[in-house]
Amino acid sequence: MASPDGQVSRFTRFLASGAAFLIGIVLIGLALPRAAAYFEIVSWRDLSQLAPTPTDTLEETDAQLAAYRRAAAWLPDDALLQQFRGRLALLALRPDPSKNASMKEEAASGLRAAVAAAPNRACAWAIYAYAGSRYALPSVSVEPAVRLAYILSPPSPACAALRLSAVLSLPQRVPDDMKAYAEADLRGLWHSRMRRELAYIYRDAPQGVRAFIISAVSDGKGDRAWMDRFVKEVTDADRLRQSEAR
Figure 1 (cartoon, helix red, strand yellow):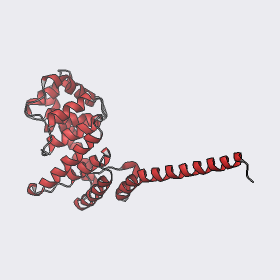
Figure 2 (tube, helix red, strand yellow; figure 1 turned 180 degrees about the vertical axis):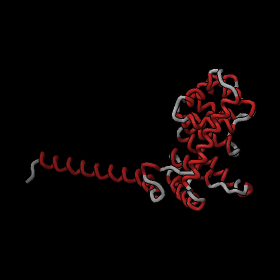
Figure 3 (cartoon, helix red, strand yellow; figure 1 turned 90 degrees about the vertical axis):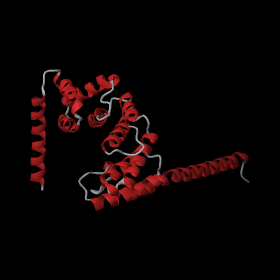
Figure 4 (cartoon, helix red, strand yellow; figure 1 turned 90 degrees about the horizontal axis):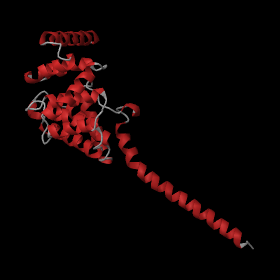
C-alpha cells in the first residue's frame, strides 16, 4: 500500500505535468497568429529583412502587397507589418492617377494602423507624415503627424530626412516653433552619411523654403549657386550610377 507521502508526491507531479501541458497549449495558441502571419510573407523576404523595396516590378509588388495584407489580417496590431503594407501600397501606385484612389486609401490605412500600434516610434510618425505629404494621402493630417515625429525624436538619420521633407512641404511653410528643430535636422543630415538626401530634399522643396535650407546647412555662408552645384553633383552621380547598373 502506497504511503500518504507517496500519493501526495504522485498527485503533485500530475498537477505539475498538467499545468505545464496547459501552459504549452496557451503559448502555442498565442504564437499561432504570428507564425501564420509571417508564413504569409516569408517567401517574399528573408525574416531578418522583412521590408519592401522600390526595385521590384509592379507585378512583384502586387504579389508582396497581397501577402502583407494576409499577414496583417492575422496580426492587425503588428506595427511593422502594417507599415510595410502601407509602403507596398505606395510602391504599387499606377502611372494612371485615376486608378490609385483605393491604393492610396490602403496606404493611409496601413500607415495609420502602424502609428496606432506603436505611437511612441518617431520613425512611424515620420513615414506617416512624409507619405501623407508626398502622395497626398486621404485623411492624413501632416502637421500633427510631423509634430509628433519631432516630439519623439531623435530618430535615425533616414527617418529625420522623412520628417524634414514633411515639415518643409507644409503649405504655410515651416512653423516658427519648429524652425529650430528643422534647422537641427538639416545640419545633422549635412554632417551624416545621409548628406546626399539633402540634394533631393532641396530639389523638391518649395521655392519659399530653399533659402532656409541653404542658411541652415551652411551656417549662413552659402548661397543658391553653391547649393545648386551640390545638387547637380549628387544627381549627376546618381544618374551615372543608374545607367551603369542597367
